[in-house]
Length: 225
Image 1 (cartoon, rainbow, N blue to C red):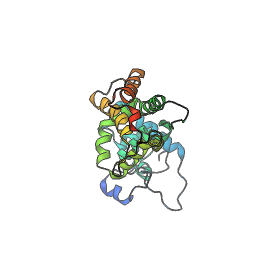
Image 2 (image 1 turned 180 degrees about the vertical axis):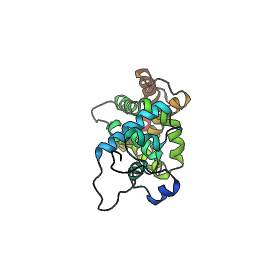
Image 3 (image 1 turned 60 degrees about the vertical axis):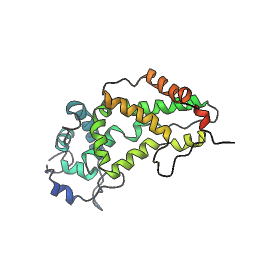
Image 4 (image 1 turned 90 degrees about the horizontal axis):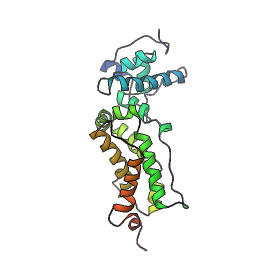
């Protein structure tokens, strides 16, 4: 018997199919009227996922290894997350790790954009995310639900930035161009080199690129009149 109170089960596709579709937040729905989930198990699974990502990398990571490290079962994992990608997404991009940033009417455009760049840097500059990023991006493209969650995570408080700078996104754009530039710069840098620095110099350079070196500069983004 494990910490989850159950016995070990296999990870076959047949077993996964019996668990049903994932919930809106990426976790598999629990049985109606069942016993409350133990938050300690959730925390142990997340911690085990982060540890094993650093030890094995994303491609070699398995739910059975995570369950063993966390002292629980693969069935317990599937009751909480519908796939490895869903679990890893929560482990490396959990809400608490992504600080919100809202522009201030009393601050300069440059300081507001620098705050945004700092936020993106804090999101991506963690070892477990660096390791998971290439594989997680590939799996996210194939998982519409997970893709929507990642876009929502990156969007965050960006509507406030759109209002601040007077630039609206096109109807078919899930993210404003400002988010594409900043997050895209961080993601591409880490895809090219997993050990690439996301430091104060990078924050300074990206902020300067946006506020000083682009043709027309930030102020030209404001609506005419």
